Every structure is written in structure tokens, then in C-alpha cells.
Amino acid sequence: QVQLVESGGGLVQAGGSLRLSCVASGIAFNRAAMGWFRQAPGKERAFVAAITGAFTTGTSVANSVKGRFTIYRDNAKNTVYLQMDRLTPEDTAVYYCAGRSNSRPSRESSTYDYWGEGTQITVSS
Image 1 (cartoon, rainbow, N blue to C red):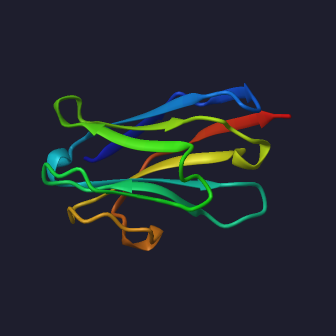
Image 2: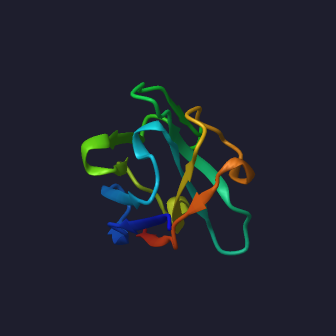
């Protein structure tokens, strides 16, 4: 059974930083591309960042967070991270970790096979 468990969410002031973690189990993690998506109230789920599997380190980051958010992984810990800096109220959303068996990253949520439950990020102004 595949499980993705996110942690690290919470309340932060604008300009602050948070780091999200997603621990995966039941999946060939080192070969899986992993991604982060977010969903704000009243909006559709949106791509944030993704990282390749298969021991490569290519990443893809949404323009809205480029230069502020960094995705990286630790295959030894079956964990993918999202470092979020210079947060703004517009970053407020539920953040979801996603994984796919294909090692290539994707910006399309429909291409991911596995999802976490999500973790809330609230940025106050």
C-alpha cells in the first residue's frame, strides 16, 4: 500500500519560510518522480514543483514560485521536500505531495498515481 505523508505546514507571517516534507512508503521511491501541488479556497489544484526520479536531479517549478520555492529529495530517507521562502498571503493553500511511477516530472496532476492527504499553509499579512 502506497502512502505519502506530508508534514511541516502551519501559520507563518508574510516574508517567512517553511519547509514541507513528504515521506513515501510502498513505492519505488528512488525511481519515482515527485511533485507538489496546492489548492487555495475556491480554486483548482495547481502545480507548484516537481523533481525527477531515477537518481537524476532535474526539477520543474511553477513561475509563480520560481526563485522562492525549492524542491529536493533524499532518496535514502524516501522523502521529498519543498523549501518555501519569502512567503506571501497568495501562497496560502493546502499543499499536496504527489508521486508517479514514471521518473519524468510532470506539471499535470492527472498524471500522478499517488497523493498525500495535504497540509495547510496559511500566510498572514
